[in-house]
Structures are given as C-alpha cells and as structure tokens.
Image (cartoon, helix red, strand yellow):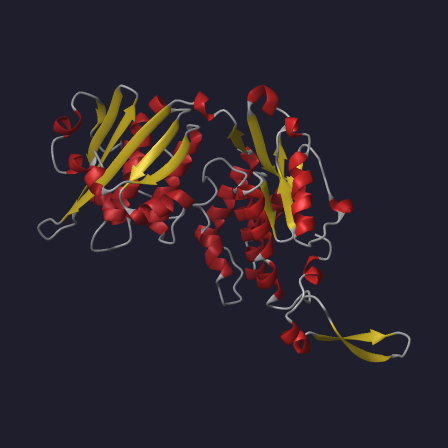
Length: 400
C-alpha cells in the first residue's frame, strides 16, 4: 500500500490528539498542525491499521475466490498461469472500491517469488507438481554467520539472541515438517534473561549447533500440488499411567497403524530408568503419550515412509505440542521433537488430529492383550536398545 498509515484517518473526535510538530526551514521555528492520518510510530497505529488488510483478504477469498494473503500493508497473490493475472486485476478493483491505494512501482511478478524473506519457486511445478519454499540466501547466510560467531566467542547477548530467535523461527517455516521448532529452549531462555551474563550455556550451545547443522542440510519445504500421489495411512496411539506399590507409576504405550488392509502396531512398557530421566513428577501420562508416536515411527517408520499420515492423539496437551513441534516443558518437548524429526527424515507428511478416548482403537491396548484388540498383525513389543536413557534436553535425535 502507498503510505498505508496515512490512508487511515483518525476519528474526528480524536483529531485534537493527532497534533504533530515539525521544524519549519522558512520560519526557523517549530510549527504545529493536525495529521489527518495515523502517525507512524504511534503505539495504537499498528493495531488500528491491521484490522483492515485481513478484511480485504477475507472478502477477496470468500466472494471473489482470489488466492491472496497479507502481512501488514503487503499482499501476495498466487494464481495459476492460465488465470492470466485476473486475480490481481480484480483484487485491484476491490481495493479501489474500498478506497485504498497501492503503489504500482512496488508491484512484482517474479518467479521465483520473494515475500518476507522467503523464496517460493514455482518453476518445476508444471512438470513435478512441487513448489519449493526456501529462505533468501542473504537471510540464510546471515543466520549461520551469527551462530558461528556465538559459538566461536562462546558469548551471545540477549539482544543478539532475540534477533537470532526471530530469524530461526521465520526460517522454520521453510523447513520440512516441524524439524526446527523443538530445539530452541536455550535460545528462548537467553531472550528472557535479565542478567548481563552473555556466556553460552550447555543447552544454548546444543541449540546453536543443531540449527547450524539443520540449516546446512537445506531440507527445504516442498509443497505437493498432487497429494493423492501419496499413500494414506492412519496412526492411533495412546498411553496409560497406573500407580504401583510405592515406586514409579507403570507407563505403557500402544499404537495401531492402518495401512490399507495391512495392520501394524505394538504395546511397550516404558522402563523406570527412562521415567527417571524426565523431571520428577507425580504422573507421566504426557510423556507416555508423546513417546507413543515416536516408538511407532521407530518400529514401523520404514513401512510408512513417503506416505501421508494422520496421527490421532486423545491427549490435547500432547496434540498441541506435536502440532507446533515443541513444548514449554523441556523434557516433553525433547520427545515431541524426536517424533517430528523422525517423521521428517522418513519424508512423511504429518497431520495431527484429536480423537476421543472412546473412539481411539489403541486405547484398550494399554490394558488388555494386544492380540484381542487388533488380531494378527506386525507389531513390536520391547523397549528399543537405542532408547536406553533419554538424554537431558535439548537433544533427542531419531534413532539410526
């Protein structure tokens, strides 16, 4: 938009609060006047202005079927080549009807398209049906350089941590799955730190090393225009946490995979030594619920590689963590990130969904013999040796 804040006029009753002063070169003194538009830098300007772009987008999508998104005063339209630019044409008409003005000099029709530091490459889409999303090269190299400087100097100030966290969160949208979301504990702690200590903690060092390696791998997100090419599977999982005689509770996890006519599944008890590796608590149901999809991927990941998988979870807290790929609880977030990393490595398109406990076919597997639940199927029933002890946060890499 052209001088966007100036296009939004204050209410007439508020004009006495919209008085500005500027230095007059002609009179060599300060002069005052009313600004008939929102002042840039005014605390309320952003909130007042940001109500309008979403309204334009909603009308364009719902009434005119224009594929448009917005970020503050910037808009991006992504349409088929056969549309001959009709989406942009009618969006301009809609904007003109509502009284807003755009700057034609800022219009871009590039392919690849760059928007907010992200490059969307459509060039292979006609032949492969795949759109690639990646960060701008300068943005990527800038983040890696900041990480290298912090690791070399063993120091990261709170201000630099805030900047780096913003860049990593932004580039996380360009990486497959939620692979970049779960290893930010140390970095987030530094952004909230009130002391002037800039030394790097163990957690922060591991966070930085992880993200440097991840960015170097360039596992950029691929959007498939033909999703039906993937085989679809359903994965249900559940956990139980029953009290024991004076010791740690008995935590048992179960999963059940529906892959066409094929059935896969398993029931595993979580060893006490693994429960002790978590923070001390009265019950470990959330940790069990998080371990269930991770164990399912460990045992049967290769069988459902390259599929489109819907994971059904009946625990809302764990479901929320799996959806975003992280958790504010450090040890739980480590397990959640292990599951998302493993699924990303197997090129599985993940969709996390809630299921009521009564409708979860894996629910009974925690308390009754698995054979009665699922009948004959391929299954795993022991704790894998590679999971002997969960390391402290932030790292839990998927098993080899």
